[in-house]
Length: 295
Ligand SMILES: [Zn+2]
Image 1 (cartoon, rainbow, N blue to C red):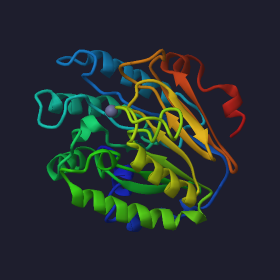
Image 2 (cartoon, rainbow, N blue to C red; image 1 turned 60 degrees about the horizontal axis):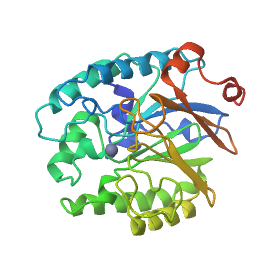
Image 3 (cartoon, helix red, strand yellow; image 1 turned 120 degrees about the vertical axis):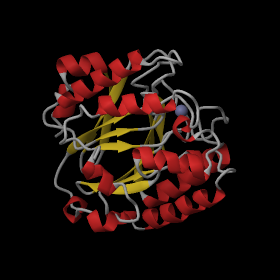
Image 4 (cartoon, rainbow, N blue to C red; image 1 turned 45 degrees about the vertical axis):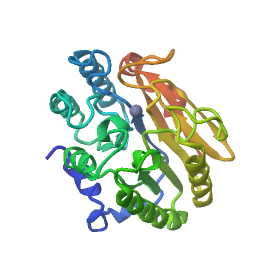
């Protein structure tokens, strides 16, 4: 199987069976890699070799890191071709092929993006995603930290699948209500809550204000430390009222001034420290020393 370890963790209906209870205990600082938007096909449409090469570079850079990251999460828009469009199958196949190069000791965690599900997902497109990449929402524990992976398309436009939205809501409420025993709670979703400030205007790259405000309140109440996202193809975000909204640029196509990269996230008992690293820099020099020193 593609990644047996995560495959088990990601089956929400069976996750309790496979939960490693040892992971519920804090055992000291660790780090993980957060990446987003390899989005094979965005650059040229009918050809995606450059994105494949960039993803390969990310995999190689991450494989070289010591100590090893506890996991690598890909925050959505794995491929560019929307469901049921011509290049979809080839892009998914090529992405899986390159990700298979990831060291087996580094579990991969997949988050669904708007291109993976369609801007207005339907039960069918969600099912297609789940059979290709695993559940669209689920949780897992790592070293005393509760990680929640969400389907942000169900927040953005669930008009084509209201029941799936309800299912995620019910599940999320239950997860948040039991979150207090964890050292940190981290959220992973494709679309950011906001790019700069919680009260900014709606735009293509953030969640609608009303939805956003409700989520922010629920997350704060549950003690969520940080929300990690992609979707923007540039680095953004900001910490407001104790909640850190982290928007990471893309492995693939850039829409701002950043360079292809991934984010190194160090989790200590009292804080979550993160910094975007260019792929080339990460491969040549590893992660920044001041971050290593926190471990
Ligand atoms: Zn996106």
